[in-house]
Length: 273
Length: 273
Image (cartoon, rainbow over all chains, first blue to last red; front, side):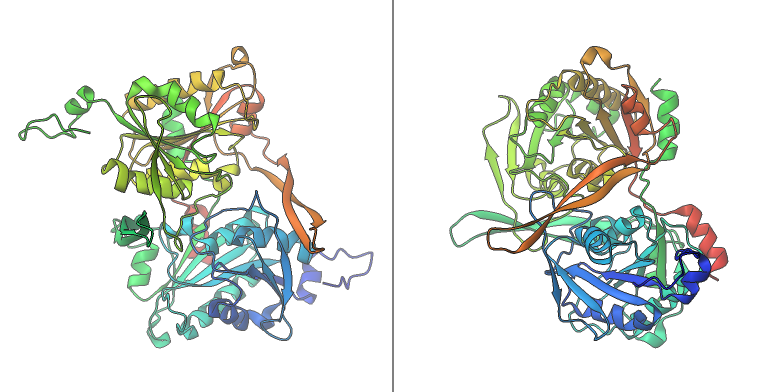
């Protein structure tokens, strides 16, 4: 981004940022060719200067993985839209954020958006999700961020309702003076747009996949396992993301990366003297 | 494990568990052949029935990644010690925990220990760490757990002091009635054992690696990036893990997997009406 401010005026001041378009970094975990990321860009395209840096292949379930033992590559590819610089990266979603800030933008963007994920990232999924880990990585680096997920895994999912809320929430984020470590986990029910009732600020439900493994033998007679599972909600509270989604609300869970369990900390300080 | 209880008596009752040896699952992220896991087993070997299920290759920085697009394999290998069933797994540390519970133990172990990691997992590293993600996965599955890390990356690190504290903390965990979702992130300073001053219950410091990428061209003239960085502590508080470690204390941070930022939740509930 070209600095338009004179040497006397700081480019990062509130006044300057009103004049300049905010820089919005967009990434995902389904890969740069997934329909979800194109829909995300389309929804917010005129709200800022958009730069896309996303994985070159699906990276679902990569969590907060980073690439340590391998080199990373970045390729500038055909833009998703004419005015949107687009990069493909060989690494994980978290690698994409790190490389985007250091080697593509050479500055912190004003906002980072991740998604729109094909499939749910509510409840415990926030921990396994590459989409959300990219958003969390941005927040660690002091960039307010949000991850968006539509509860529809299919490649031809209808993003109409999702796009409406992505835009609404992005506008709210740009208007609100957000703390620099802000991360929002936004999930959108897979229902017709007219059935969406609004959004709810929620807590993360204690709901998870109860694992199972499909067991098979390969053509060489060697045994293998394939992860599968059934989703179970153990949380009956009504302020959870799962409750909101089941009731046709878009769920917004503010997320943090300080994982300290302060209640247990206080207990152990007394009992483990 | 053979149930010794009669049909009238529940095997899971407190009395029964006093008589039976607790089952302790051990995993890591440096791989089943790393010295750290052998030292962990050695430290707690007589405290329970130990079963090892660990990755077949280094998995550092894998965070909470799970394997979705590939089959997983388990191989029973030469035991680390005569009485310790040992399995090698092709997946991530989190996959190891899932497979161990479902396909090796066919029950929840009483405790899960992960490590001893070669290198620090304090502060923000908890999020990138495969060692800690394995422990968190256990806690999600209602198995109290701890991850242990020694602040020495070398393959020939001296684990003497680490082993002493691993044993002490494991004994404490077995004696304490722990909530089923308990996770402890334990880091041990890389100093001579006699210099260790004890342990401190801490919070996660806001300290992180400030990224940098080494840029090079490969033999074919194609550009690549390699992640590196400098560790910076932004947190001056004295109850953090980084402070404790810098002052020769073993740090214990209780960790949680509910990532909800409740402070921001309350704010947004008011301001985003």
